[in-house]
Image (spheres, rainbow, N blue to C red):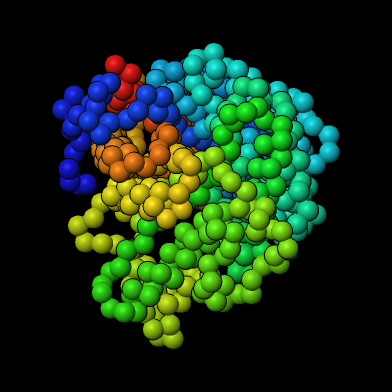
Length: 474
């Protein structure tokens, strides 16, 4: 199937996509078909029911930080539309819903007294999901560190890792009898590098040395939280972490380009993979970044490598790189030995400017299975932003997103045929939402949100996905 062509009708898809219980190369019973969101991007209600500010509440008010000065103050107002949104999930036939819990809504000071009203919201959400037969997947951190902790050093200090483990236990003790799937951290590469080296995410710093310190403390927080969760959750709870991956491809066969592929892969993928699965940082990582190693204490790497029940995979695109002479060429941030090819003739792109490359999902899943051997894999994010337009009525036509989903689900099927232990697939995103530095200018949702009225309109892609999931049950 061409990645630039229009989608097929789902009734004429290959057998592996069309549904049925005896699919050749199809999906196993119990496969988790779902969608994902994060708290700051959809909830709104940032000053209600005891929630305190996060680092993102502070960052969005910086002049020039966010498209048109937009904020997450209201977002998709999920806090007040939760029951309606869960009803939409049921209408879409979702079997699972991945959401994040806002740390400052549960522990306004990051530690100390629990805000019962905040925690009760997530309890109601979980109960509402379960009543609809939808499996809740909880993410404990999706970038919204309590501002009170930032004032005490934030991720730059080790104490925050311990505070995160305590927060994880608070949530697990309340929800652990009903929630089976737990994700500690979402995309620590982004938290670290975008927030502390490039300054385009909260808290908006510009120092690579700080970024590697933050990355280490976030990994440590994951390990500590995993141990704490295991001590309080029932047997059978599934604990993992979600990393974002970009398979790296060579633009040519020159030796410097082949070396550049290794450097880019170390920087973009192995930085967090190797500590988690091998209890070590890649040998060349810190020299590639031009920084000193982070402050690693004696038992840190053993804690970080606490065994996982699954690895979450966030996938959107690939990297195509070309080796350059560092002293004479423009280079990608932090990696002077290569440049990233941004536009490829004949390729298709999303509204984010990301190449549509479904083959990369199969590549990363099979590589993770082959080289790191996680017990299970779960695609925790995969989706695309396009220029969706609503003209009134009950539909939004987004054939490009349907095609995107079709081709990426085909990649899942191919990975399963190679014995990859894949357990589920979460589309990013359920709803159009606040897309960080891009504000409300990018739409990823299966459901269109008219922000002026908070009306929800299921897009054609949402209808397609609902039909596809229904076909898997037959």
